[in-house]
Length: 600
Image (cartoon, rainbow, N blue to C red; front, side, top):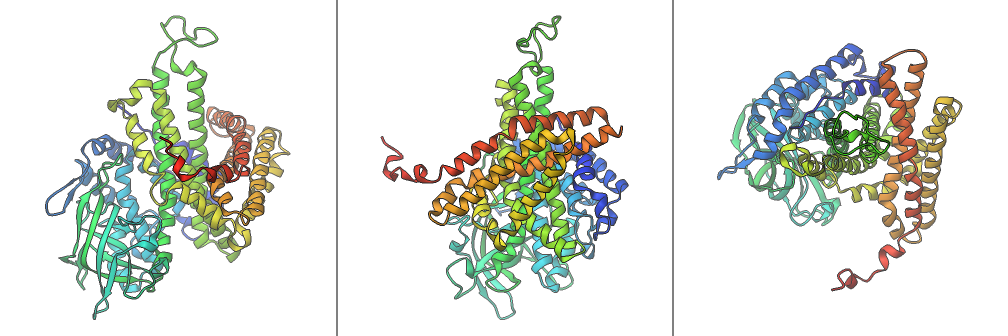
């Protein structure tokens, strides 16, 4: 049976030493995040997910969700009671606005708790996770009446929320949607169409589900410019806030999928359902991107979170399983075999997992800080900088976070050998669950194209130049410190590869846009390598400083420095290969005639 222990100590280290939580006490909401309060969130939140949610992870996977003939959906055994405890404990309200019943904590603190929740039970975490994205969209674009009607009960968790984009004939290309919105005399709209792949689209955890739906009004352009956003409750809400009649939206079926069986991924049929316009007509895509960007950061966190659990279990197994002897001679001559921990290749997989999970954790939390600062920093310059950075890094966190998350889960399964392929050990579930994160909220190829096709050139390249400057300045300081000089030199070479690849795109992309498309994923991973390397530089700097001052846990700090060295020596060299792939261009990628892909 698998196990999970929330990495409270590592999160606390990142919040203190990389994010610098206490240094932002003057920012709105951060005054609530005192060290004692944050410790309580981490400790109590970790205990809740480990004791209540984690035991239901395999249950959810094995039982899945069931749909009745009337379209109602029942979640796996235990989910409803666990959700009740989640709501009563207030875990879903951490970063929600106080005006609507939230606690107003920084998003970065809520992100730390969300990692724990996803690690414990990814399918369960998706139910409140989707509601948070809907809340963000209504806070930004909803009118006062919509906010008053829906937000208090969505924030409390009494009502759920979804985002409805995908249709059978279109996914990423939203200009192809066919769902229609017919205006009515009372100001409402009749929504008709079919949406697919709707996470938490129907379930029994809440009394109501507030769907945010993309649709086109009559006469709207037949492209993404004609899309509007509508709020469509599962159950209509009376003027006094009580629930009224059931709306004309039903679950036609539950998708049979590879993983996340505990979450109800639905086909939703809108048969003249009543909805209301959110924001301006034909401005729906901009409103929906508020949800999508929040979701993409959340999906990047899923990659990290599943990797963390898989990694923990692989370590436990490698410590216990005896197989073969150390190459340097028996490590334990009194035993018939040594543990897997003596084998360099097993160590390689575990060290790669440790380096990526801890590095990505720092990147996700630092990214969450930028979300806070973008909205709440004291000056326009600070808000712009934070917005530029998180805009640039959102596709990197999503794409690299989920690619590496799946890679870590697969390697953790590999550590188990044949037992990793057997259901009872739980490792194959982590591989299956991690796989979806590379696909939904925009496949990772789409994330890469968003990065190189839009984000690099946005505002004249202001964001990427700011990122380069941050890394360059921190490298200059680190090179003067003996404990970090070698790491800094290696990261500087990787940064040089990233800058050279950026220049290559500028010089060659206009001549042939396929060069950009062919190198986009490699570029995304190259930027992810440098961004994660920056996090490791910060962690190594902090660990060395604390060690010299005699602060903190010596073994923990030693482990940080060793892992930073591993990242520098064994992972950062990949930057050169990624650059060479980018500079290889698109000629060979695009040269093969379509008819020859299957040369039977």
